[in-house]
Amino acid sequence: MVARARSSGPLAAASAAVDEAHVLTALQDVVDPEIPTISIVDLGMVGAIDIDDDRIRVELSPTFIGCHALGLIQTAVEERLASLGRQVAAVSSMATPWTSDRISAAGRASLRRAGIAPPSAPEDVRCPFCGSEDIAMDNAFGPAQCRSLFYCRGCRQPFEAFKPI
Amino acid sequence: MSGPALDPATRPALVEILISMADDEFVIGFSDSEWTGIAPLLEEDVAMSSLAQDEIGHAKAFYELLAGVLDDGRDADAIAYDREPAEYRHCRLLDHPRGDWADTIARRFLYDTADAVRLEAVAACSWSALADLVAKIRREERYHLMHVGAWLDRLANGGGEARRRLEAALERLAPDAATVFAPLQGEAALVEAGLLSAPMDAHEARWRASIGPTLERLRLPMPPAAIDPERGRLDHSAAFDWLHGEFTMVRRLDPVATW
Image (tube, rainbow over the protein chains, first blue to last red):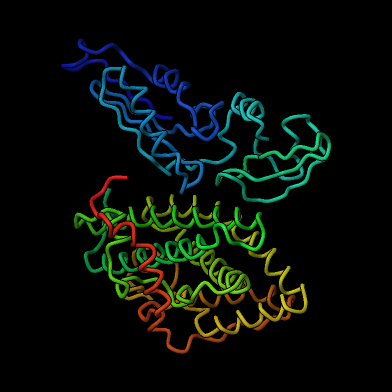
């Protein structure tokens, strides 16, 4: 990530100092509308952040290119950061391509809480409900582009797993 | 966003390759979305809908790059929806009626394997915006290749009606199978500018080498060379006129509406 904070300038006195940590803390409140237990920060969608006296630019890396939630997430980012007193632009970028390795440890735990197995090689997927290894993939494709469908023979529950990509 | 710094003579060729990749993804995505609700298995209903959404997403990203290069005031939606059928540049392979499940699997196998070779041909291109997008698309297309590979095996080894229908579908598509690699106007300039790794005929040869082992194992025929490669992206069928009417229907109701 790149942060650039200019300390001087005509507007510096008018708006409080903002750095990358402020932005990331605020973005912890923005979730993927399809998985409301995980913030976009823990999901690994936040790329370069560029801050100056009158604007903030945040790059968002889509999990899948055709993700319908991206527009909603961009709007949510712009609304959440509006209180920092600068013009906000949330732009989609593939300069830092999203991969499933970008999900944080906290993010992986959040996924499990939502009943979604975090991304793993198919043989390493565990049931998010009971932890069983006795599972089978029903369909590589699921209800959203980013997820596959599995079945747990241990607790006899269907579940979703984030696709490794 | 705008295009790469280019010799003005190379720009039309860049437009040509972007529009051909965008239109291919758009047309196959829209065709496959027609299975939503009526695929032969519930799992495939979900899978085809997800594949279609991926392809439409890829098309949108290509149209956005194209809008920057054209810089004529049109956005991605205007390029996708506001052209007449004759102005589309998808390949003839994608210009058949949807047909049955075997037609869909045969078409996807021929197209996905060819598209994989074409994506590799631009993966190391000199324009970073296109290289970044293609790198991302290739990660997603791996799932498409696994899906269609499993279905090709299942139909080819299924015997009886499954195999008969698959063979018939491949025979119907055979004359157009290689049209993904129809030569592009000005492709020598693209190679020169580092936007395409080699001329399309070299990529067609790589594609044939890549699918040879699968076709041999399943005792399926290698598609013949295209009869008239010059016309591979210019001559659309009545099937496309119908599809065009479908996918522009909502846009034509109110072209300036905000959804």
